[in-house]
Image (tube, rainbow, N blue to C red):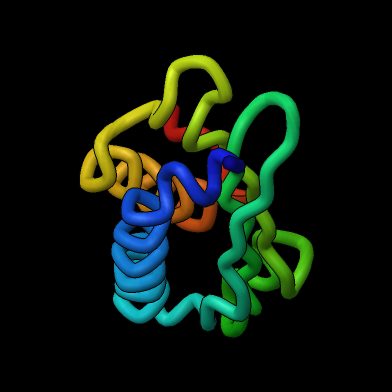
Amino acid sequence: MTLRDQYADHLSAFGAAATEGIQGVLDESNYGQLSSLDFDENEQGVFVSFTIDLSGEVVERWGSDVYTRRYLIIRTQDGPVDPVEFGVSLLYTSVMEDLDTAGRRPAR
């Protein structure tokens, strides 16, 4: 049995919550659209990968019209890294921080 099979309920909940959370962050700042969110598995565990098609002013600041990230969410030996709600909040918070601060100089 694969980790994806073993943790199917966790991945289903994570996928739904991550899609909603990431798109909420994007809609709030008018940064673009979530174009894909997928899970893949290797010897380290299960990863979530996602791609965002950026639009508006963030494209120039980010330096690209595509944002992609990949995070380990289930370790082979230890299971889920975080509970669904906490893991998803870390995920979309990191998206928000990346895109909100992209290309901006630190405040002095």
